[in-house]
Length: 119
Image 1 (cartoon, rainbow, N blue to C red):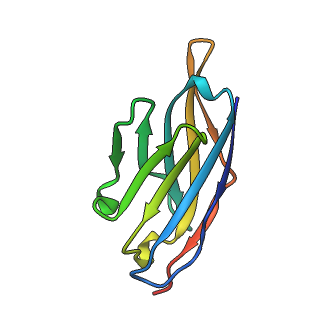
Image 2 (cartoon, rainbow, N blue to C red):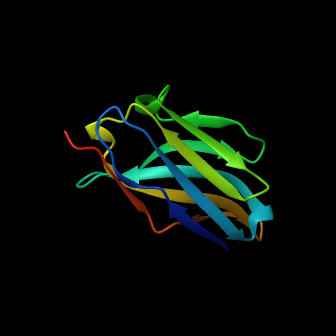
C-alpha cells in the first residue's frame, strides 16, 4: 500500500497560481506512476497530469501550458504547479499512486484538496 498526503489547495483569483504537494509513504519503490486527478461538482473524476517512474509526463489538454507536474524523489513528493488558473479549474484535486503489488497494478488515493477559482 501507498499512503498519500496532499496539501496546497485553497482559494485563488483567476490568473493566479497554486502549487499542490503530495507526499508518499509506504511501498514507494513499487510505484510506477504518480498523478493528479480532479473532480468538479456533478462531474466525473478526470486525469489532470501524470508522471512516470522514469519522469515522463502527460497532461489533460485544457491544462497544457499552464500546469506542470514534477517529482522530488528524495522527498517522495510530487507537485502540481498550477498557473493562469481559471474558474473551470475549480475542483477537488486528488493525488494518485499506481503501484505494483503481487504482479497487479493497483491504485491508492489521497484525501483530496479543494481548489477554488471564483468567476
